[in-house]
Image (cartoon, rainbow, N blue to C red; front, top):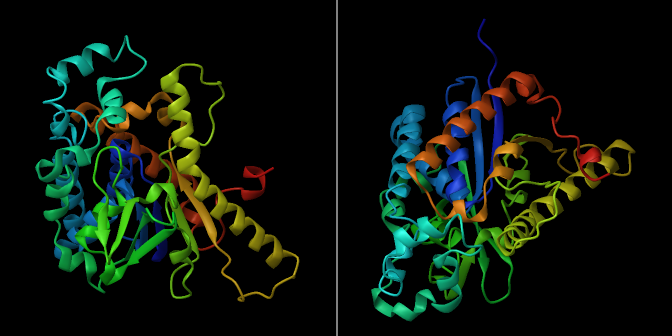
Length: 341
C-alpha cells in the first residue's frame, strides 16, 4: 500500500566536518518517496548541506540531491588537514606531520596555537577561503529557484551580533560562505556593506523562518552538538570544546523553549488555535557518537571520519523513521517539557 505524502521542514545545525552526519541523514531521507521536504533552514555546515541538496534537487530530483551532497563532501575531504590551513603552512613547517604527532600528546594543536597568533587577514590578498571551490561548484540558479524546498541560511552580523537569515533568492554564494565563516579560519564575508561571520553564533539553526503558515508544522532538527555531557571537562582542550558546544546550542535551546511556551499557551486556551503555529518538533542525532568526538575533529575532515559520520547519519535517520515516522503530521516526537524540566 502506498503511504500518503507527509511534508516536513528540516533544521540543520552547523558543526564543521561533523556536518557529514547530516549528509548521511539527508541521504537516508531521500530514500523515502512519501517524505517531502518543504523547507530547509541551515547554518554553517547545515547551510552547505542545504544548498547542495537544493542545487542537486533542482537538476536531477532526489538522485541529483544525493549526488550533489556526495560531491560537496568529497570536496571537503580533499582538505590536507584543517580547512584553511594552507595559509598556516609557511608559518608552521611540517604542519601536517606535527598536527598528527601532537594529537595524542598536546592539549592544544599547532593549528589552535596558530589561530591565536595569526589572523587570516595577515596574509592579505594571498588568503583564499577554503570552502569557496565547493560553493562555486553549486548551481546557484537551482539554489535560488522557487521550485523545490525553500532554503534559508543564517549568518551573524559582525557589527551588531544579530542574526541575518538569507532566504530564497537571497541565498547567494556569498551568503552561504558567510554562514560558514569561522573568524579564526576565514575573513569576514561582506554583503550589502555589512560583514558576517558564522551563523552558529546567533542561530544554530534559525527556526523562525520555518514558522510560515504555508509550511508544514513539523520541524526535524538534525543535531550535531551534544546537549549533555555527564563529565566535567578538566583539560584546556575539553573546556574549550564544551564552551563551543554550549554557545552553539544556546540559540537553538532558546527557540525550543519559546516553542514550548507557545504550546503551553495553546493547550490552556490562553491563545486561540491558529493564532500562532503549533510546531511539531522532531530531532535526529547520535549523542554517544558526538560525545566521543572533539572540537578538533570538526576541523579535520579526513575521509575515514566523514565516512563514519555519513554511515551514522543514515542509521540515525532510519531509526527515527522506524520509531517516529508515523508521528509526522500528527504530533511531535521531542518531549519539550522534559527537555526543560
